[in-house]
Figure (cartoon, rainbow, N blue to C red):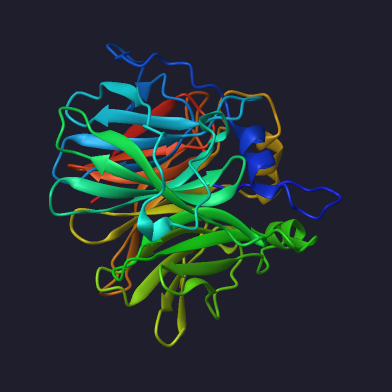
Length: 364
């Protein structure tokens, strides 16, 4: 989802300020489980999970990892660990007291847990059940934070292992690992451009895509200046990046070696996060609104739920075909979808402002 703020310094406080502005509360206890939860027709819910902006299934397990935005007025977000079989959940607290690994030797130290603002997440899988989790952080620093994700235990655990500090012009949103050992990340706006937010609202190019490699460091990709660069994924062979253009309702396919770009029209869907489905297609979740400004008005309000209609689209990267698999009207209980994963024939859907995860049967 979007993270932006306007100030005399020209968006220099972009990420942290806006994440705090649209966060709600994360008050569930570490061992709380849901027994009953009011549903709405065909849409069912997991309740009392706060601001689950991103979701990812931990492959080879029954577990789902969720990134939760922080409490309003607070400075720390966190993670939920959800059982896909029975929808029970708990919070998961990382181990922070490590030195950075050699790969991230330039990282000064682990972040202050009290100022750790979780945004986009992604997993690079290892061969021994220990994986690497990448997390966009907007706390005391704009960064990608890395964690060892140990899925060999009864419940997966997280141990902080390093960071890469973002360039000063970047307002990071989502992250995807690259086959060679680096990662790609989106910047939804440009922090050093005082007109960047206006460009975003107008549906004009506002952000860009970055790659980071251990030996080369940061590289801003040519032809990646899109309107509201949001979710990102990479093809399994590393040749293509799939980038959500939130502000102009598009999916961009960027070829990494030639920087050629193909644009896919997503109709009235404002695409947010992108996730792989089990069949290799991509699930793209997002909001359906007539006015982008309406979303920001809700972000700045005190409401508990931002009730915007939402969709999930399924994109076939081989044929470039796209179809809508979830199309729902918002309610007082849920709206403003930002992410979706597929469990069986059901989409599990998160939101930037709300107290639930929605579960909707996918249209065939």
